Image 1 (cartoon, rainbow, N blue to C red):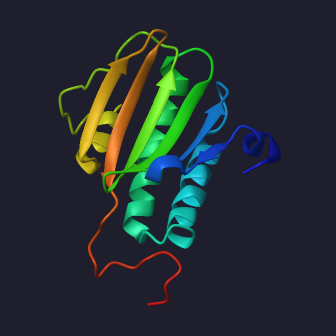
Image 2 (image 1 turned 135 degrees about the horizontal axis):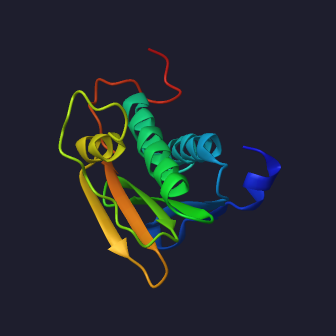
Length: 157
């Protein structure tokens, strides 16, 4: 993550909740957002002792990428990414200033593109859209506990 992105990152572990957040300006930050997710989950494992498998890491990065991409594609201005460990899940929350709520298109295997929300909903335990006083917030929860046979970050096979 570059220095500008690092300057926008806020971390907290108060009250048993582990959280990190960052603001990404319009037209930037998708790779940085994925990097923030990777770094956050590595810290969750190394510092807080919660196991994180490679599959969970990949799934969270995918969800982050899809939600930040949509925020930057469909809403003006910056977006706020918040990652929280809560109730055995990684909560991926993205706020943007757009007032139009996302719509899920009917499945169509011939359609090229616009499958991001389908993917996010398929890999998430829950998915919610909330109107905010300004804009909207989309939250997807990815289960932190994974197949015990799956590889855990940093562990040699």
